[in-house]
Amino acid sequence: MTNPVIILGIESSCDDTSAAVLADGILLSNVTASQSVHQKYGGVVPELASRAHQQNIIPVVDAAIQQAGISKTDISATAFTLGPGLLGSLLVGTSFAKSFATALNIPIIEVNHLQAHVLAHFIAEKDSDFNPPKFPFLCLLVSGGNSQIILAKNYNDFEVAGQTIDDAAGEAFDKCAKIMNLPYPGGPLVDKLAKEGNAEAFKFAKPNIAGYDYSFSGLKTSFLYFLRGKTAENPDFIEQNKADLCASLQKTIIDILMNKLILAAKNLNINQIAVAGGVSANSGLRNVFVECGAKFGWQTFIPKFSFTTDNAAMVAISGHFKYINGDFGDISKPPFARTMI
Ligand code: KG4
Image 1 (tube, rainbow, N blue to C red):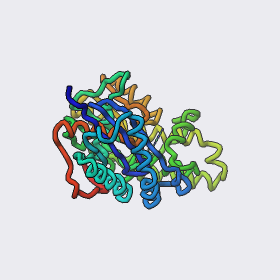
Image 2: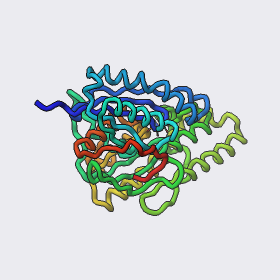
Image 3: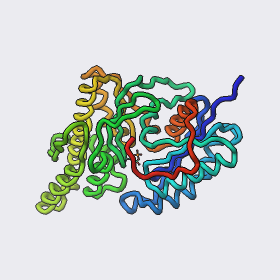
Image 4: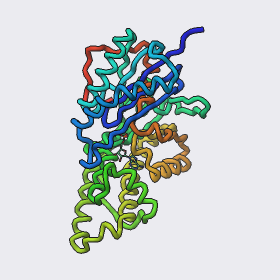
């Protein structure tokens, strides 16, 4: 009997330190330490994120190995996020992963964070249904740092069909939430409050951008000016209308996201449609996504909640496919902050 392929995945691109262990493509553990230190600043502070990764990385990796019930000498390769992300944060994860692999004399595997979000759909768990999309499929990748429509042609072949030219969808949620004095990250709170509100109460600007690209900075400005005007007349306007504001804002963001996805699916003639990234946790987006599936004859794929936000399981599964292909990394390659796929 051959030994299983055991991949240790490490994710540290933003403010989550995460490690996961995968054996022959089946998830054995996925441990994440999130950083609450940023809350009082209303956004991620890069220097504080790096310091917290430094504190978290060893206990998180140790816990992932223990929970998986393996020994570190069982690990076949270490996969890690090389980018894109915050450089200081990436330096912690990449340096740790390279040192760990060197000490164990095993290969390293570089993973692109955005591709990992798309491949999160292929994470298999013991005793759970496994129903991944078939290639080619479209993936709406929406997070705090990215908004893209990705055409996944194979495990290692991705094309960006469209992407934001300014803010990401998550940023639109978070920045508008901040204007309403909601704590960071505002996305989940807007989602919660929107459930009680009327989505037709207010109308905000939608961009007019060619092709499949997105823009969210105009919406943020329109939201800000609208509330400036209203609070000048009535200082309690936000408090009195919070649920309706959240519902209307959420509807606008979902409309913007879905209109381009519908267009891309139609023009590219693809009916396998997936969603990924932190904003895909949004309940309104999930509902509309499923409705569109029924309306347009799509087969839709929504990842489990724990695989939508940043996590190392998606890095480990990306590493698994690269391991099978013999696609190993180069220890001298530095992390990168920005990239296209
Ligand atoms: O993918 P992710 O965990 O991390 C990065 O982008 O680094 O995404 C985080 C983003 C934040 O902007 C957060 O507000 C948003 O995802 N988010 C949500 C929800 N849950 C997380 N936005 C709207 N509704 C949600 N339920």
